[in-house]
Length: 64
Image (tube, rainbow, N blue to C red):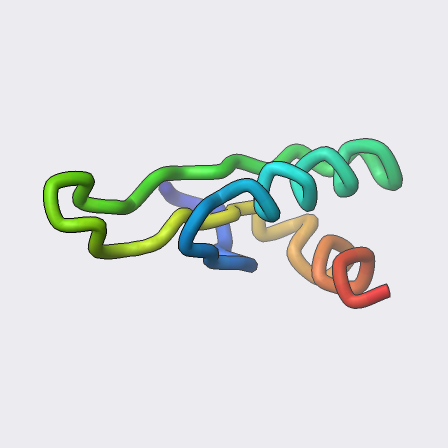
């Protein structure tokens, strides 16, 4: 995904969906949650991405 930065990972993805909603609610930052797990073996993670222009602001929001 060109221009998008990984800012979070999770085993379940539920927390990332909450973070995605928070980013939109606080600053209208668009975020994408992607399932990168191999379901047959339960390996891998869910990942949260934001556009590179919003990366710094998104990280500051999530740290607060």
